[in-house]
Image 1: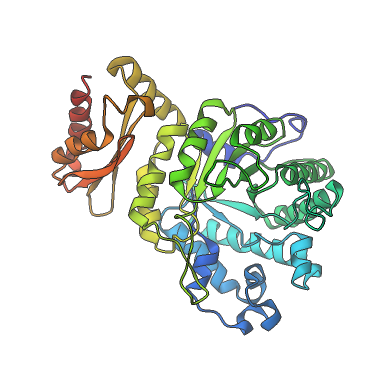
Image 2 (image 1 turned 60 degrees about the horizontal axis):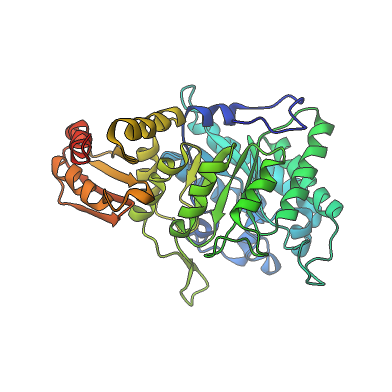
Length: 421
């Protein structure tokens, strides 16, 4: 992967990037919807005026936040995000706690670090991503209120949050859910100033949010966003939240074909539904979500993946972690290259095993080849060998399973034979 420019002379804490070079990293599930499950009271948040300020819980209910982190690590996640999505000085000032920027961010990072240290081993480290969300401003817009902020003000906000997160021990700074590419540039500028002050840098991961048309809120398409991010000292680029994995497929495919950096894909579990109770519910069930994210490496050849907003149930993340476990970028590239060279096709199949010894099968087919090889038909071939009863999906991606995990290699061989390999 390309080394980001301009800051590459500074020492880099790179354990996170080293792990990416070895294989896919699985992120945790959503913090917000996990907190919903605790049915906290205003007193838990620190008073009525702070009810809903999830980030403040790292000070008032650190036990809840650490328990959420550990629940995700227990089922196989490699990375947990700090509970600091809205902890820039500007956002905390809106809650009337602007003076707590350092306390909130340092405490959040230490909670996540403690959880990771409990589950990390020498063979399998766990990582903390410092979550950094939008400030609520849109500097590129023509809105007289939302654009009333300078680039320097934004850079300062991000610098101060990053300073505290690094002091707390994060492994990577994660700018996520970005809706204005100029704000991302300001964040990276703020990080750069901080790194020069500290004399070292930590990895930076920048993720934008796209709508169903494949554009950011102010109209920036994925190609333009990628071009901007590739010109910045950013180590990982990607997408998060948005409208679910279905609408990320084409943008992810574009990034996998054109980007030179590590890629991350962290979708919502579909569009949120209003239950009338104040809780957000996301419609995509854990199984289908795990299958869709399990197929992501087929498209992008490594990187990070995650079951994001709405995945409270740990089963989906557990399944996804098992499907992705042990897959390295080089292995994926070899599988894809071999498939094209020996089979004359872009067909890739993966088999993952769960705790009960059952096998899960995912088949991916390059879009322009679906008229020749239908993924649903191929997955049924493999499922029959595994003792299953078929499968389902789309022409370019399908999944199935079966009880006979010992036949995993036979199932892959049957698929290879079906496509003339």
